[in-house]
Image (tube, rainbow, N blue to C red; front, side):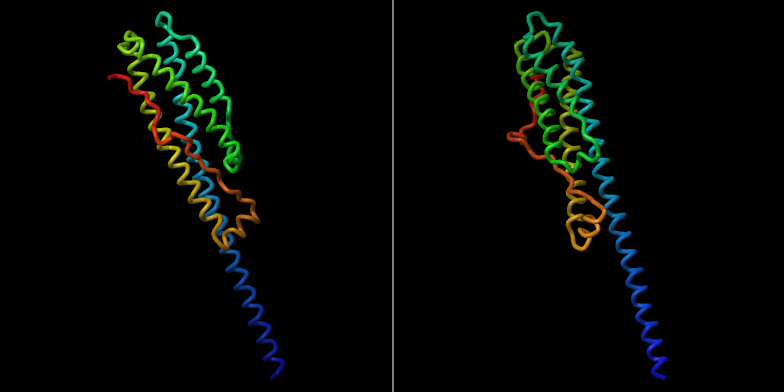
Length: 205
């Protein structure tokens, strides 16, 4: 009788261990897959950010060429835009860099410098009525304004994806799974000083 009870107890203990192992396996799998899904959403959001910044960079040569045709246009202003574009397109981030706040800050600083150079260019254009009346310039100006809006939207969406990922990653007990499988914290775009005011690119008044 006692032997049967011992065997029954061992069987129940083994069943409990197996059940716990199955539950643990399914929880870890679920947590891991959830983190992968959110991590992929961050990467997809980053791709969109890169796309809109590239769109802006692609507009710059045409914009410069249009403005360059004006007599006595300030060479220093054009050179600043060309140089800023070169630096902005030279900073490339991989998916792994999205967990590096310093790398993202470097990218953001390069893009911010291009935004500032473009803003200065538009201010200088105010002194040239012929450029302001140029249909090609007006078209490029509208495209630039639209692109700046897209940049703001895609940056916000990227931050939302990063926040969802980081929130899941930091929650317990998912943080144990995240630590074991080396899911690092996603970096955010930080608002620069004066970023609440969008770059002024509409000078059609």
